[in-house]
Image 1 (cartoon, rainbow, N blue to C red):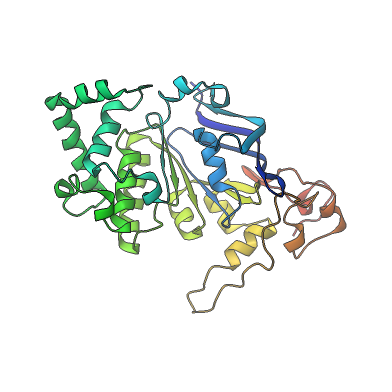
Image 2 (image 1 turned 180 degrees about the horizontal axis):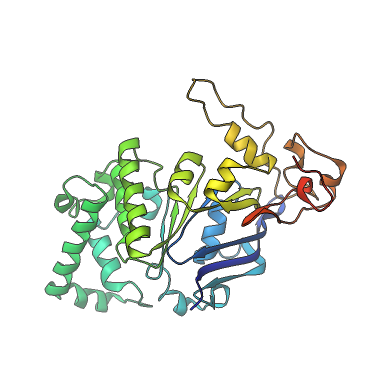
Length: 341
């Protein structure tokens, strides 16, 4: 059995807009091994969420297009799946925690109904009204599912988990709704959990407890974790490997320790320099902004903001090259014959 659980190869995704075709993902490659925690970091708008939505098969139909690439999970090509096949994978083998609880929690069902329905019906293709009603009458199964739902609400540190089961999302605070969303992602105990900024609405103490829970799942249950964040401190704590994304491209990847200790790409260096210092000094920041995806730079997409910019950067998209064991960088400074930094 292969150690690689998820593998994304040369993924290209574009969206049709009023201004033209926006080429959002440009040859993304990444992998997640069994029992491994991997982080994707980068500024907002760099393509992190689009990447994981493509993995989950949740890109909007009509406006989005996958130009090329391959996404393999347990050896199966996810891009070739029919909707009936997705029912046995999405929410069951691969689960996702979204960053906007009010968008992804159903306002007309109680918290308890949503959690128990995920437990009872996850992995099944279609559940009609009659079948759902008959299932609701099976008190034994539903009571067991409700008990397990309360246990997961307790594990994500939701106050009064039993009482919360009877409440509706609108009756909860933003942080409480986010914890319900995390419980929904974890309750089926998936092989791969994708967490997209799961601490968005949480205060620091609760976020720390959620990170402890995710670390425990990886360490004790062998759950694989793909963690999306722009918080470098959280990424350093939660992940074993890291991918740095800029404007729809992976510009640097390696073990988290190696990338933080020896950042090579100018963008990674800029991100780390932007972190506020313990001395109270503000981070330096990165001048400029992410390019227009409709008309991105023809070469390196970071070139207009790069302090080491050369003419070569304007005409050539640099490939990922290995600069240390397992540490790869996409920058002309590290291509063969370049002097590096």
